[in-house]
Image (cartoon, rainbow, N blue to C red; front, side, top):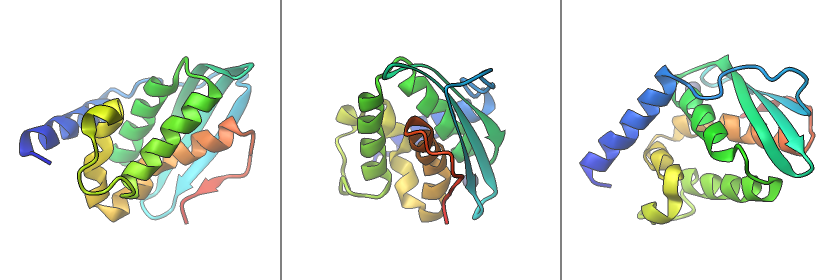
Length: 151
Ligand code: ZN
């Protein structure tokens, strides 16, 4: 990946860490799930308001490293207003990207906002930080209330 792009993505992550979007609690959420990454100490709780299969609102709370927080922030901004099915598709693409299933040169344009995470693949320990919010969101979406842990 070219250096300029890499720096831009790092900038986006830093920005989301500094000013996380949707960092709040939803009162009476229709769905809720907790996530924990013991490797780094990241804790992310996901709140969801589902209306039929539509994500009317999604938010998070918790504490953790810059990557985990930025990932939750980016994820919630991407998923708000999406359907359950769309959210699952975006999750799959995110997961394929960070677990390197898309190869060395993923189509960044095709990835849209997810491209920001393409640099994370180079740091295996960071993949869990970036994935935590996403796995927790999937549990919330599917109504599973057992705690997500990355171990
Ligand atoms: Zn972390």
